[in-house]
Image (cartoon, rainbow, N blue to C red; front, side, top):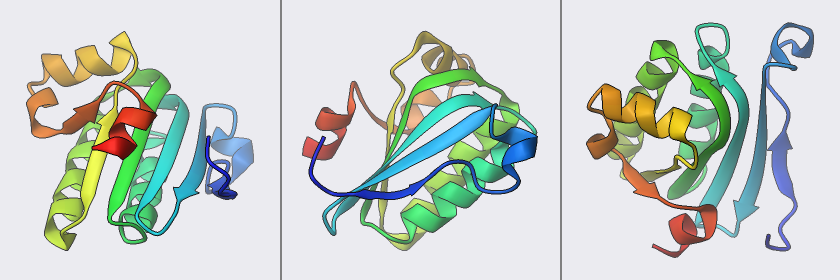
Length: 130
């Protein structure tokens, strides 16, 4: 970890509804990068929360690293949000880099043919170094 304080934490929205299903831990890495660590399930219920996180943090830093290593489910709604986030980052001239980190995420992206669309890294330090 670096010495920067967390930018934001927890799920946005009503934590009583999805706080136990998904959590976002956000850490700034200077002016140039932010890391959003996603913990939990990305499904129809939680995908809008991921969309909000991506919109907020893509706009805030030239590089957004989305650490999906603790995602336990990635459904079609989550995949759609990831693609939309990549498109948004590209339009803004920003970078979105994924750390898949788990077989669940990697298989979902491979099975849908989306893995090649994303800039990926094996872990967060590698994602920040590139």
